[in-house]
Image (cartoon, rainbow, N blue to C red; front, side, top):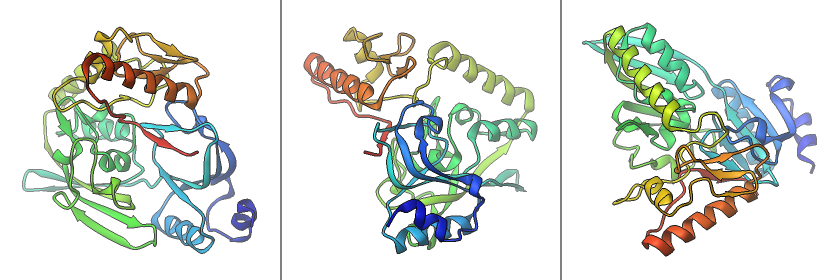
Length: 305
């Protein structure tokens, strides 16, 4: 049965403006690359999420979950089935014994949270505040910057599995490691996160945030679309340094290029395809192994077909 027909006949309690068919994923990824999503649905609460998951189960339709579309490369043929973008928003702050207990919905953008915490003089989030994603996506991959990771500030994570059942994980149960958590192995969708931060001094918080923002502007190719840092660090090496030493800065395939500003980033110079990026990545991996006998791994996730 045709997916568009299934969706239209299902009477989902979701505004039609939030259900899109054959939607170009380059509009929904920071890389500005990717073929069409067969059906893209923007979800604003847990009930909508349960409803869509139930429909997908009933008709055996594959489901892909996204947040802000950072840290991903969508392939050129797009994403089959239903692509869910988590837009669940909400924030609650409770002060407990000098600590700030913060409950955040998964679709909240990290940059927005950084601004709110600055206004409310809440510290401990400064290093994270420049990550271009949502809190749900950041928790799933244990995102980090400037020596701090999500595991350092997360207390609990509320999730939903693909059957619509809810589960809560403690920090320990999340099995946080470098750029991964239990949610990368098990099929759970983050719905809400409890963070533990603390009261701080507004001037000091702002000074730290400004310093990190300056560093990003100077060191990272923010003027071009990218998926963020393309490769993981090695256990005993810095990948970007090896790429630079191999003379690959500025090397390109089509419009995909190793940034001349930071060799750990592959950027889209204009009309790069996913195929361009994959060919470039393959070439980089081969050259690094050939020159240094080091295997490098992607940090970005490849999605679609």
